Amino acid sequence: MKILTRYIYKESLKAFVTGIIVFTFVLVLNNLFQLIDLLINKGAGLLVVLQLVVYLVMTLFSITIPMSLLFSVLMTYGRLAEDREIMALSSAGINTFRFTFQPVVLALIFSLTLSWLNLQTIPTIHSEFSRIYLSIAKKQPLLKFEEKAFTKISNYRIYVNEIDKNTNELKGINIYKFTPSVSLITAKTGTAAATDKTITFDLHDGIMQSSPADSPEKMTLFAFDKYTISIPLLEEHKDETHMQSLREVPSGELLKIIKYNKQQKLPATQLEIEYHLRWVVGFAVLSLVLVGLPASIILNRGGRTINFAISIAIICFYYFILIGCISLAENFPRIPAVYVLWIPNAATLAIGVFLMRKVLKK
Image (cartoon, rainbow, N blue to C red; front, side, top):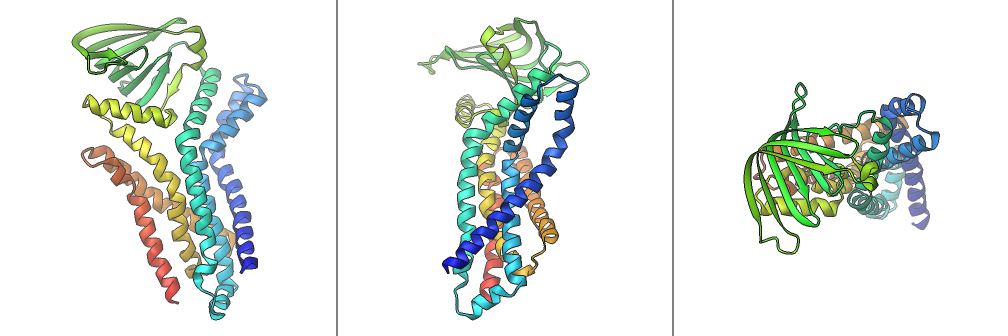
């Protein structure tokens, strides 16, 4: 059995590496022309562009690792089934578990690793990628805000819910500051203007809340019809000022903002979705492998092309459910996002158990 176990691990890892290379190339190809434009037209150095490529590849791990491990399972066990080796092992009285636990072990290891990366490392990489990219591509001093994204400016974080593309008016503005005192400014509408030294916001119809960092219960609050705030661009922060989407916010800080919003009875659904997605996508590896393992034995196909197609079909099925659950969580915030977002993993796990029972009955 040791020989069989080594063989399965060896074949699985070979197919995994093949999958990583192919799937990464396909996904990076989508951004390749932008990177070439940076190199040729924006004057970016070759080393900087290569650094962006490395960051881009790492941000794709949440997609490429589940796809590649699923492909490796389909390839390895599809080939074993096609060559009648699984039938021979079963006929020899070897328990099915003895030659199917290996990919589950790999999937569990990759799930834990990917979850850790999603929580600790990938947000930082997203942030670094954006900072470098924007420092090259940005030609105007005025920051270009994006909808439903955080902008980091010095000690402030600004969240804008909606942008009128015709008038450049910002809607649903939240300006957070956590040091030296905790404050939150919300406004229904506003505009932003930038110079080399400051960003100035003209806000309308809003509320300002503030409290000492060590005494959050001592809160002051006042409403305003119009309020202007200028945020200085400190010299050491000039290069750090860039758009920060939710996926760039560190998990610890995300939890901090979620807690603060809930305490102040402010919307936190988008923040909760982002946080729980980091766990859900990490453990998608395990769920998908538990589907792919029995499916590869039942389908009895060892060809590389057919298994690429099958792995893409299973991934599309999974992400179709996931996107639907994200939409459900956004539209029905009363339902806890943590329950809704785990539905795709639970569904694929249930399908995997059903298929595995069919395999064991053969």
